[in-house]
Length: 469
Image 1 (cartoon, helix red, strand yellow):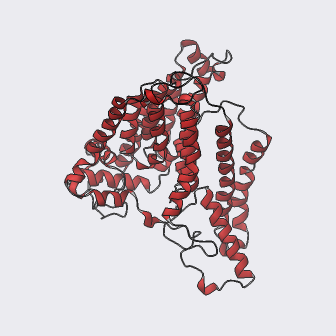
Image 2 (image 1 turned 120 degrees about the vertical axis):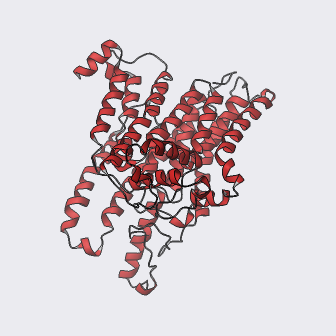
Image 3 (image 1 turned 90 degrees about the horizontal axis):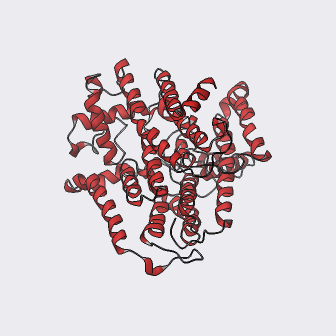
């Protein structure tokens, strides 16, 4: 607190927050890392030692390159720095290679590229208007937003323990959002187009960008009641946006189009054979669906309604990434998840067009698109929830009594799963129970948050102004 007080007096509190979290990241360098550490080391090796024509064909390691081309070039650039740390990490055949220098390079590469995230948070803080609430630094909205973003615990775990480059990617997204709030629409569109060619998971929020830019940039005026003024449509602006998207896409995909490799690239980017859920269930609608199927199958076996010999061998509770069949409920296909996701996104898109609320409405639509894709998408990772969490900014009291009670329930759940369950006789017979309970409990909370946010968006009135916000 003393440090914050000094920073507040000197006006350097943001720098203090950024420096503090950077030091924390440095302390996390020797901690555990997941298989993603080897994934990115292998991608460094692929892009450094092989010609571009082999990037999306190389399969020496099971961790093949499955990100869009801009991220491949990002790894290529990093590899030319990595060679000064340890040349052996850039050998494609050194599968599962590790050394102290490799560890230092990869950890510091994440910390260094997080500079973009820090800058993006700073730009987002500039978008918060209104009077500063309270005299204390810790009560000011800009300070609260900075802490929630820079010190986001989920992002720290995923990037600086688990190991990924989400901070850099979220920096691009937050910066594009900030530019839209600042009415710098072309810059925002350009940054988002670049982001899509770094990581294609952001396609889920593309409808929010597309509709908002069409509604707020290509149409230059509204009627007094907030409805669209059709004669204000600007063909020049539409062509400008289209040109930005086309040029970015051409730069990214052009070389692979010339090599006639686009089908191979897309087969890596959209691997539908991985199955409905990740090895650890993301707490979404399909977690509830899988849990219900498991409960019904157990009941069916107990009551002898089901034949044990006809139960599918590939189980959702096996912890493996694979295709499988549900036992009782209908099995889910990629097309079914796509339809569910589109249906879940449509109401928010409808509100963004017919009930315009300026940049604030765009942000809420973006969050709903991210949450809807998390709820109903195919092979969703648990960490994908960050796509909805990081852009979110609460404007009302954080929790009511029911929400507080739910969050406090996470403590007993953790104790039960980690300490009590291993001591029971169910550990060998039902090893899936801790995973099932955790996923289902968290899925209930996320479903509640998704539904509550949707209700608030649907009931809020449009902002009636003659000019676009």
